[in-house]
Length: 360
Image (cartoon, rainbow, N blue to C red):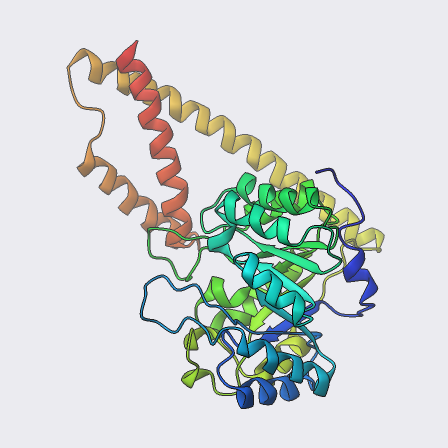
């Protein structure tokens, strides 16, 4: 797959003067629910109504969607409101039914993106379609896997493509349901700037009180829009109740969000920005130099341990370092999550250096 302006044509064709908003319930529950939400969304900036028809659940026994009957409810919602429709597909049967129902946008979920077999089956079923197909990032933080799924669709002659950033699973507990790992979609955006990039703040946040902040961060990073789970009675939703917002809240969020200009025009702004960026470049260089000095000391420690037949990993020492750095980080207004990630990466690099000394 090569960089091409073809990918984003579908988004430009919408002719929107605001970010694309795809909204609707996590799951279609009843015909009444789908229609009520659709009519409420019509009063917002939403262009597309989403609803889960088939719901992949982590464990059996949870609500797994109403199935194909929900597609008829969505068809009626489109007839009454004019909203475009979007739903998730996970196999050929889903694709066939969604196409027959006239669904406008199909997305591939995070659990499906991890499997090249599933993605290829969907790509084959969609061969040559002019439908819009969006690919959510895989559950694990792997840019190649994400891009690989997009490439399979591209090679199936599907040109109306886009991606959805919904966060990544992590073993460690964080303030998010799925860790954003912002650098991964930034890297994707750098390689394919014309591939529309949407945010799914509902699955990243896992709770409704941080939806706005996630959306604002996405806009600050030049995302093209959002897919937000929206329900008229979120607390009583049949699935993912905590992360859904009301259409009224959605409308207020879209009013409050600030759309940044990609480039500033004023000379004074550009001069100040260049000065600040130069300062960051200097500090980054100092950080790398300091890190190099640290690893030289680590090498000496590794040599000393080898000479005295001492184990590389010293758990008590490591816990003290992490505790001390978290204390200092708090004083510098740095989050504990950030400190943990940075120093665990440094610790892993230190272990590798000491292992090299032990094997030399």
